[in-house]
Image (tube, rainbow, N blue to C red; front, side):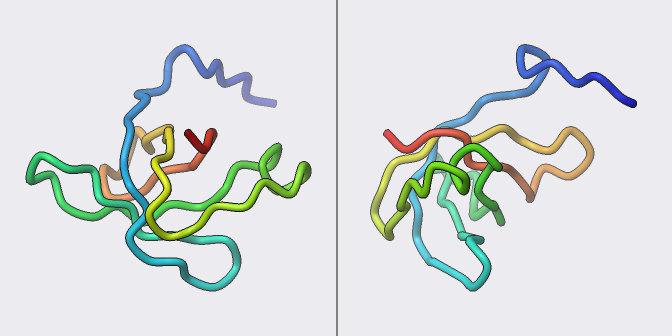
Length: 75
């Protein structure tokens, strides 16, 4: 089993632009960086935290693909 530490992940802040099916979202990173495809983390699903269009969110970026991420906190 692979042990991944959250400290190693790149954390970014963005704004939700579009809500898609299956708790996936398009997030604008701002600063001309473009849109990122993101999904909710397991803890946010488990605690039923709602994320709406216009919310600022904290994301962990995928280390292999800069166009994907995981939403870990609603701000």
